Image (cartoon, one colour):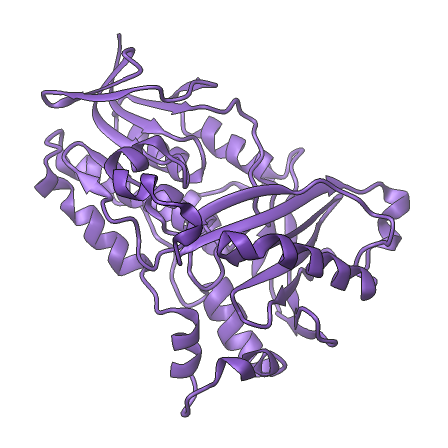
Length: 381
């Protein structure tokens, strides 16, 4: 039996960020993940300056052999309608990364003990300790294994038994990321520093076309599983008709699902256990972006665990749930748009309003996607 102070289930940004802070605080931390790292993740893949500040990312070090694409603006439009609105910034507002590289970097940097390629087969509680797989004993358990995290499903058995397609807050996505050779770069019309975002006419999702140095990332995400296949087909046809992608380009889609934070999972804290990142359903509801919420929730989880000083009761861990609600809960998309205007906006008019440069910059990009007004979260202590 291998013992540790804290067992983190999931080696993604939430788990590695939590583990890194706990290790710095002097705790013995084990990270377990069913995947072998480096492993890829379905994600458009960009991080904001606030993420760099929160993680203390050494850009010069990270750039050694890894993709780090500065983003100085966006092109936005509506699927099925002509025209793009280009928004340029005077500085880099985000940076393109590849999850296969980024997640591995954060996990290695955490200095936690790693048990990779090891799925969670069993969980049980003995007195004040957790026993996982009959081989790891820990006083504190952190579930950070994404939407399908076994700890999240153990805490929320009712959610686990319900068909996922019926959840109104479930985002499903398809994505493809692949390298492009230098000779074929001219056939891709997307500029590396200007990712393109295309919203669906019902605002239930959006697609993207993003060139990151020598790689292309194409994908689409929507609320509701059943609407994704036809939406993905329509999006690709639309991109080809607009010459955004070569007519002969082919790829294999990969899929993913996650909850957005309206509302988070019903139970995220109990005695000796808490959830972070996608396991807690914390992706931003406006964009579905989950890297920053994952990292910040991992940090908040670590702060709470350190502050509990080994007494992991429900009461000592309750501040974590309060901090999550204060940090991440947002109004639904349509309500946010309506509140930004002095009149009620019909959803039928929303795609046309995306032609407004002011609206695109200040609401869609600055508020929804970049969360520019939200300062970086810093570690305590």
